[in-house]
Length: 339
Image (cartoon, rainbow, N blue to C red; front, top):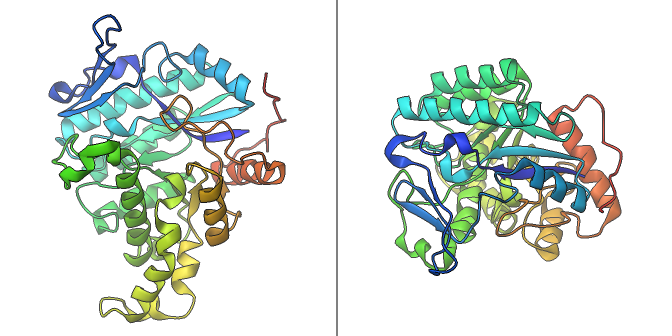
């Protein structure tokens, strides 16, 4: 299995963003104090990072073996995208994150690969860091949030998209919870951990709409973008988006043409880590399987052991798609049976 949804927390990044942290409190069972990971004013409670696969690479590899994961692509923790802080701190943190990630994957070739964090509030520096991460560090793509302070279709980001094409690497997009390095836009999301599921679904669908309707995919025909969690609520909204493009006054003639919106949506890649088999079936019905890739969120609160939910044919398709998206030179790894 090739796993494209796996976050990592690096010891060397703790405190690397100044007043934003991140800080780690391992909790105290005797005092009934939950583990806490603080980033800015945001606190993630109850998730144990240290002594887990998030931070312990040996535990990660052991759990990969247990689950039959041959290759896992590690990505930054979305809590530490830091797209809204000052550029100097964001650049330094991105370099620290990417250096640490490259060290881990370099020690485990063939089992681990990495995606680069980028300081997107400064597109020029983001391009510089992407070139360094790919050409010098050996990372195989870029990983950014959905909320960059400016819309994803802002022309300022075109240089980053162009750099992905020039380097022939994919771009992965994943939301971050609200209230970390910028004010939470909707305080209702603070209840029920809604930032982590309802908020993500909204952000992912908005990202898809912006890439499609805002012209990013039309301007960058060779850009490969993979959206986390199956594009969030896109499955339910794709037909409404198509209708909006055909009828609303803001849409230009190119978007109004028959089949254009569907073709642009069809250019995207979809993370199969969607929460359950029914959600996956809806995603497949809406988007097909040609650009669907597998993800587990290993060690996360919503970890999925098998992205295909027991469908061997779909599992093979997910791996073959991952090979194409990641530009893997050796093809699909030989299956590794769970232990």
